[in-house]
Length: 348
Image 1 (cartoon, one colour):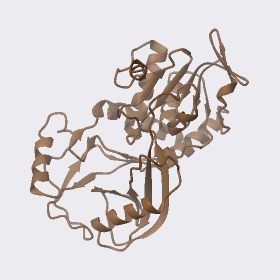
Image 2 (cartoon, rainbow, N blue to C red):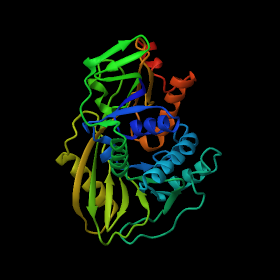
Image 3 (cartoon, rainbow, N blue to C red):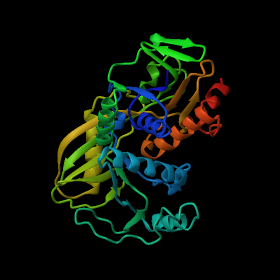
Image 4 (cartoon, rainbow, N blue to C red):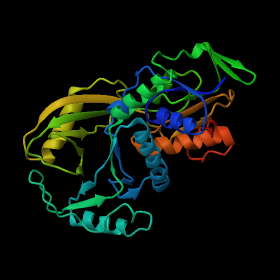
């Protein structure tokens, strides 16, 4: 009997798998690539809400846990997917400058917000009020991580790319049976695919579609991430990721002309140089109505657990939440009440 079946090999599933393996637990992972949101995500990590200069929930704790884990994976797989890069928030007025200085003075934000404005001028971007610089930022090339981790799991014969069939779960006294596998627990880390899961489909997973462009802009010449109404993220060879849109109605992974035009319009307001669109992606982020993740154990079947609702900040949240769930299952440590799915069942 193995310890964990993990359904989903995005940021949440990989984080849980790696924590389990580091704790000498046995796992088997299912992922049929039906949910591309991790793969098409911008991959940015940023500990500050840049709309209003406020701290992301548990930002320091997330960073302190996530990046040692990612760097262990990089070393183990001999691959690089974490790229540290400053984020510069374009400021639009003296009032925004003052708000930035006030935020940078707050003890919880001081490690993240630089108290000196960046006055660099980028030829293709007008910025008379300069930029605020955010520290402890960068991006993960998530598709590289997923490909490398899938290959690693396959080499150990503990990975399947077939879809998961919920009807084939049989509950045993001390665990469960799924097809030929006996396991103590199943971790469902399925992203927006949770809606098809009959054990957790009553959770308030909403889903927000995001669209993203990759552009080629030889004259843009950026070595930082610029954040304005869109973000511009340099990925090398004059290529940049530009995102992202937020659509709460459309729950498909199909890129749209409307999404593309919205990004083009916002980008054209921000930069003055020419660019061409190289690729156009879309995916549904697993967002939650109360803006908190969905983590915990099924109220009836104690062998089933959910790790979901990472939303737009999965790079930082994934490892932190996975560790909380692992410690909850293995050591009976209570989950933080903000993330525990008990809050959803209590409201009913």
